[in-house]
Image 1 (cartoon, helix red, strand yellow):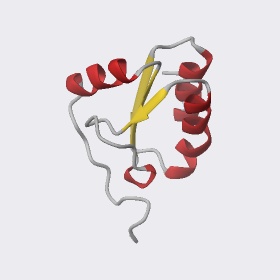
Image 2 (cartoon, one colour):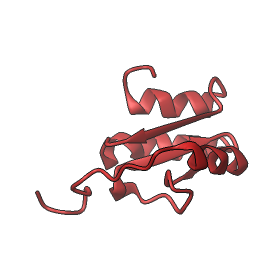
Image 3 (cartoon, helix red, strand yellow):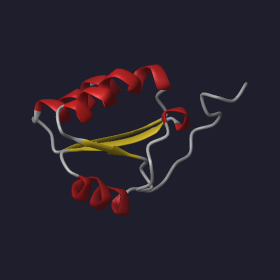
Length: 88
């Protein structure tokens, strides 16, 4: 962990890490970095293995879909509350 979700995510885009996950950061923390990973040929999804939902405050990025799915099976799931599209 480099101290910020964006740094961990961009390390995957750079090829310096195979995967990264995060629970609890916000949409503005994930938006650009997740896009950079996809543009670099990486894969993003929800930590449960489903489709990435930027408002859920949960994310896995990996160098491949197989790596992301494998990691999702190992993680203890956590659902941050509230979502970014819910009022406090």
